[in-house]
Length: 319
Image 1: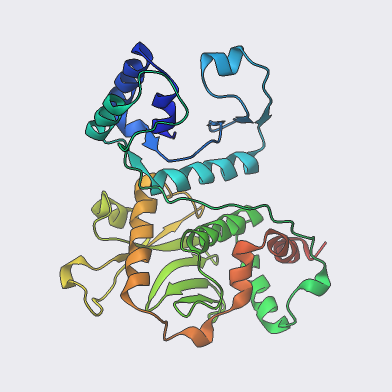
Image 2: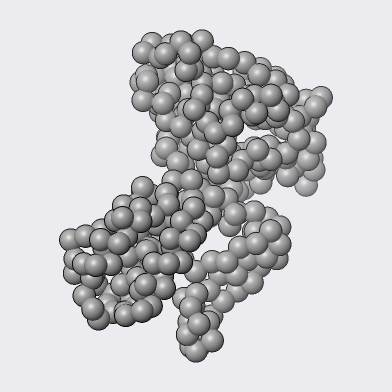
């Protein structure tokens, strides 16, 4: 993932054509994201974050700083970060890229000075540093009954890692769509004592079923790549009925998969999942099930310290 305009603009002459050839021969493997400046290399077993541009001079010709990580949880977090950006961005339009190169000044520059651009579907992100103080037991909500129910459900899960993985998925939904806990379309529920259910308006979009053979449920768009195979592979399946404004033959699907919650979460699956959520967010403005909304579940997704406290209570008796 790279800012292709900044990339090609900082080189001149034959180097630009070399970049163009590289992009053309690897179009499906390169995504354009404006203003991305992160330098990260990630594999299944290791990750490197640093200040160096990933060029020969950047890596071998300058004094730079970098850190290598081999801890599984950090690598997984970085992989999730990459996958989230990748799924929100797109491959480079080669015709636009050619027009942009033709419009550039002959001299390399960090400022293109051209009205030509290369399309990027990735959203712009405004970030800020947030200091989060550590929680104590006194900071946890006073709703003891809801907390006890949540802990009981989590104790059915095969491991803390399984539960953590589910709440990472819920965080993905909340942060992607910037949903607040009091959003009238969102319901995070523990109304049933053996599952955690997340719905948008009239439909479930995510569910955790930790009892017996633990599984995770998702809604996916009918146009999702290989949707027939995904349905066939599912341990449980349900076809949603058409709601207002929907085509009877193109409704989303509900699929449940056993084992680790994130095991299905490749780029194609996530696109289908997020597209189904997007359609449902736009289809209506409120859920008829708001009375079942449990803020504790929402907080488990967005508050790392709070999640740690509850998971410690569920899996280690609060130790």
